[in-house]
Length: 174
Image 1 (cartoon, rainbow, N blue to C red):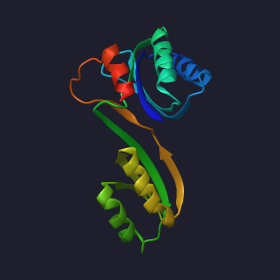
Image 2 (image 1 turned 135 degrees about the vertical axis):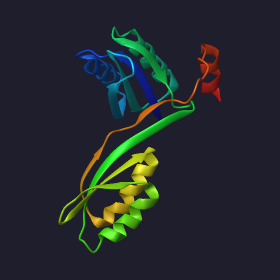
Image 3 (image 1 turned 120 degrees about the vertical axis):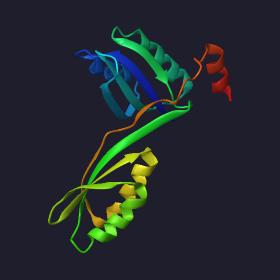
């Protein structure tokens, strides 16, 4: 099962390497990583999408991540109300005759053309991963020359109560 884990960390050299190494040792497949500075100086937020076998293994790795020196907070936000977005840049083959047709394809996705050349169009799309994937699938017939995706960046919506150990156990059983 896929889980979205966020880690608030000190912005120091080697932190990302130590965290990904820990995930690798526990045989977690990291599907995407997004890392960037936060509103607090010297603090970064990491968002991981990982494939996990069971909740016990997830709880174990979350506890181990929390023990890391530069880690301030770790949360599994998968089952919470969250805001999650991804960015994709897609370069496709295009002629001047196809540009209007392609514009019609990307418009419902609120995607934008960010670069035009004689034989290519570069498109930017942001949104949920499913939306990004749907647009990529629609653009495949035109010929995707290059594709770059950021991975998911996410955080909890609004103010949510802290989850107690009892709540975690209860939610795992349901």
